[in-house]
Length: 338
Ligand code: NAD
Ligand code: UDP
Image (cartoon, rainbow, N blue to C red):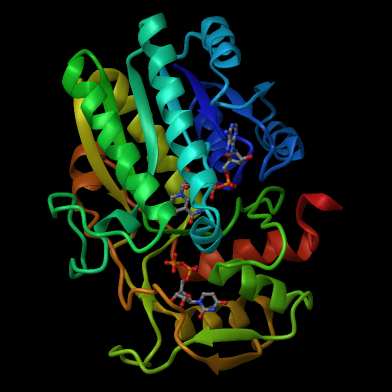
C-alpha cells in the first residue's frame, strides 16, 4: 500500500513511518518542519533501511498538495500535520483554527479532485471533554473542550465525518490518541519539543538528563490514590502500529469509524516519576505545585473496539516507555538539534 503521511517528520508521524515501512508499505511524507526536522526522516531510513519520499510543503497550500497527491496517488493519507500545544492554542487561537482546519479542508478538496478516498486522522482523547467519566468509549457523546486545540480536533472530526456523509465511497478513520510517550527502541528517533516542554514525559526526561532542575507536579489534591492526575500513557510504537492497522482497515472498508488508541490502564503522575527514576537509575527531583488550569483529573481509554475490529492492542508498558524515552533522551540530550 502507498501511504502519504502529512506531518510525517513529527513525533508520531516519524514513528508511524517506521512501523509502516516495517509492515511493507510505501511511505511518502509532507511536512513544513514547523515543529520538526528532516533529520527525523533520515533516521527513519537508517532504522528501516528503506527510502522515504520527502516533500517540504504546507499542507494548507492547495497547489502544492495537488501536485504532491497527483505524483503519489496514495492508497491512504494519514493526516498528522497540525499544531498541538494546548497552552499556545489559548494564546493564539486564530493560528490554531487556521492551520488545523485549513490543512484538513485542503486535503479533502484535493482528495475529491483526484478521486482519493481513504484518510486516517490524528484526533485526541481531548474530544471526550470534561464531563464524560473514564474509561472513555467511542460511543460516548463528544464533550465540551477546554481549549482551542481541543476544539480544532472536535471540528476536524466533524468535517471529516460530514465529507464521508456526502460521499459514501470515502473511508474516514478517526483515531483518538490518549497520551503518546516513549521513543523507538533504537533511541534514534523520539520526541523533540521546542523550548520548555509542556507535557509530563518530555519534562521528566529533561530533568533526568540534567537540562531542567526539577519537575513541578501540578496538584496532589485530586481524588485519586496518590492525589495526582491519572492518564493512559501509550508507547509511541504501539500507537504507530495502531496506524498501520487503521490504514489497512481504511482501504478495505467504507464509512467513518472512530477508534481509541490507548492501553486502558491509568497511571498517576507520581507513578511515572517513579518508573522513570527506575529506568534512568536515579530519582527524578520534583516539587508539588498548584493544579494546572484546564487539567482533567482522569483520562483513560476503553480499548476494546480497536482490539476487536482492528486486531490491535498496546503491548508495551510503562517500564518500556521509560526505558526507551531515556535511551532517546540520554543519547540525544538536545534532540535533533545536535
Ligand atoms: P508534532 O508537532 O511532532 O508533529 C506534527 C507535524 O506537523 C510537525 O512535523 C509539523 O512540522 C507538521 N505541520 C504542522 N502544520 C503543518 C502544515 N500546515 N503543513 C505541513 N506540516 C505541518 O506533533 P505529534 O505529537 O507528532 O502529533 C501529530 C498529530 O497528532 C497532531 O495532529 C496532534 O494534534 C495529534 N495528537 C498528538 C498528541 C500528542 O500528545 N503528541 C495527542 C493527541 C493527538
Ligand atoms: N504534569 C505535571 N507537570 C508537568 C507536566 C504535566 O504534573 O510539568 C501532569 C499534568 O497535570 C497531567 C499529566 O502530567 O496530570 C499529563 O500531562 P500532559 O500535559 O503530558 O498530558 P495531558 O494533560 O494533555 O493529558
